[in-house]
Figure 1: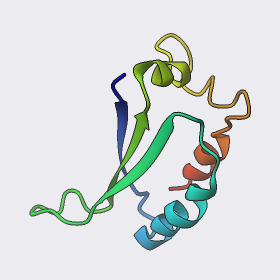
Figure 2: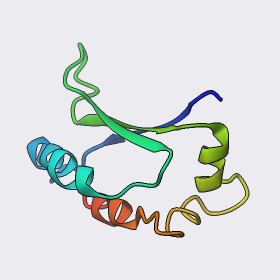
Figure 3: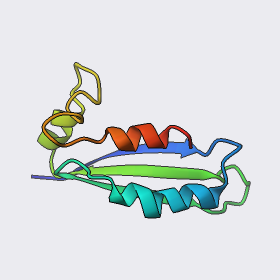
Length: 100
C-alpha cells in the first residue's frame, strides 16, 4: 500500500515567539501518544527572498495507507471522530496546539 500525506500550512500567532513554539514541538508534543499508523512532522520556513514566509510552518501527517487516513479523517463526518476513541487519543495535541 502507498503512504499518503495530509499537509497543513500555518503561521504563528503574532504574540507567539518562534522559539517557544519550537520548544513545545520538540519537548512536549513529541511526548504525546499518537494514533498508530500516523507519523507527524513539522517543517519550518526560516527565510525567503520576499519575507512572506517568516513565521510559517508546515505540519505533515503521514499515514501508512489511505485506509488508515480515512479511518481518522473520513469524508462524511467530523475529522477528529476516531482520534479520540480506542485509546488512541490525540486530543491533547489539538488542545495544546490551539494557543500557537
